[in-house]
Image 1 (cartoon, rainbow, N blue to C red):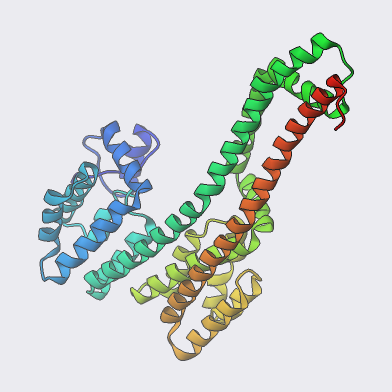
Image 2: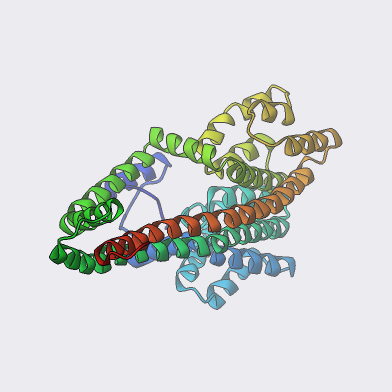
Length: 383
């Protein structure tokens, strides 16, 4: 047998193979280029979506799985993905199932993806599951692109404003400072404050950068810890509650609904859907959900106890349980909150833009007025 195993180092890889019941004959590290390709594929979901859609079409046309993968391994444009497909095909020809072959490439195929494929293999409708996966990936990608495009203008505006202020403080104000010093006139208080800030930045800019970098590194490390991640997610939830609630409601509902429609058992589907949630506060509130469902409490009741999900979503989940259409209702919940999220982001950006413009305008206006006040005081002109 040949394949890939995820491990920290050489010894850990051997130990992992022994635990799985295999006797390692030869273990070598994966080439750096291949690992970089897989990392890129994980970041660029378009390759995974393209692979899923094309494989679903080939299987729906009646081609067997191994032949379909062989075709894709020859026609796929991305070299990294071609290597992954060939590896999956080789594992299948060695007797492994499709889902087991996909597990060798966790950087490319996430846990959710593998579990849905496994459910499709058991039910014998793999191409249908692949179609649903393709729809899920397309919806997720569209939502991410909408959020990204909505935030481009505010980020550019913020960067331009900060750059303008730095140019004024570092390059423009020092020229006026020399003139004011030569004349020896008494300067207004705003001008004195401005000159002091400019002088401090020019003299101690390396200390400021060092403190900022150290603070950023410490904050990043703290956020990566369990306690820090929870604190950061709790802060985001307080500041952007409506945006985060709608985003996580859409994620959870779409993932759970897609898994249930694909034949994944409810308890396993809940665990997988919880894994896609990005906010640790919400994840922690859902820890007891699967346990309550096992006890026969249903979905709507335990979800309402978390006090996280909106009342409309809870009502629709309850109706879905009563009518036996929970999977379809969850997909509808996801569609509703995807639209709500887009509207909320649009309103948020519409509000953010004038606030940023006003803030930058006030700062630049303070700089300009401080300089003008000094000039007028020197020339004894009335303001």
